[in-house]
Length: 162
Image (cartoon, rainbow, N blue to C red; front, side, top):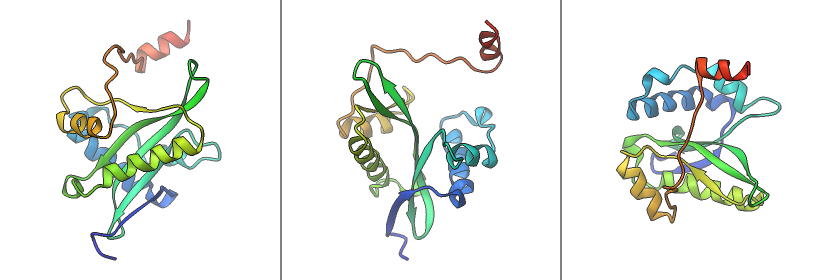
């Protein structure tokens, strides 16, 4: 199989180590390695359980996983329809500009349309100009009027106790 041959497919349990390694590369790129604490076993448990919490598509070149899109379903109360939230999209630097990222997003859009989803959305770091330009080129628009909030760690534990 040529290194130029791209195969896009749903992830399988055998892909978990490769996806996990790519997540580590993404964490390095985003300067967030200190937050990357999940294991291959954690990832596998959530992607491939009888009731998965998330799903992934992989892009292979030459039989090797070189990129992935990890996503889950959310729900829009205003649309009264489900949506897909793209948690992470990553393609190794040496394989960028070959259309892998675009192909992964096209496949997610197809999945969203086929399943009656009302939207496909994701977040991008403000400083990531190349990704922002790429997404805008696909017709995505920033949701500047929204601020993302997050509760984790000790604050999440405190909140859970009321």
